[in-house]
Length: 125
Image (cartoon, rainbow, N blue to C red; front, side, top):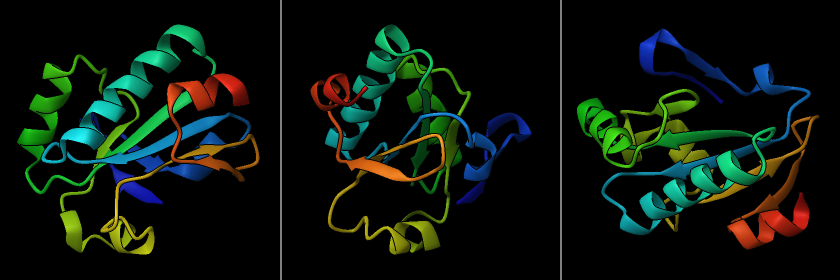
C-alpha cells in the first residue's frame, strides 16, 4: 500500500518494517468504522504506545477527512486518505465493499489478526 498523506507525508507499509502496526480502513460516512477508528486509536495510544496505528480513510473529499480527524481528536500522523473512495484500488483489493476491516501486522509485515477490537488487541499484545 502506497498513499499520499497529510502534510506531504506518504504511506508505504514497507517503512514500518520492524514495528507492530494496526492498519485500519474506515470512512467518515460510515459511523461504525469511524467509531472503531477512534476507539482503536485511543486504546493503542493509552495502552500500547509502541504499536503504530495507521489508518486509511476512503473519503472522496479531503476536507471532510481532515475535519473528521479534528472532531475525533486524532493526530494527523499516520492518518491517510484515499480520495478515490470506493473506486480506489486498495478499496477493491481488500474487498472493503462488504465491510471496513483492520489488521494487526507483526514486525515483518505479516498479518497476525483481522477485525480487531481493543479486547482482542489486549489478548494479542
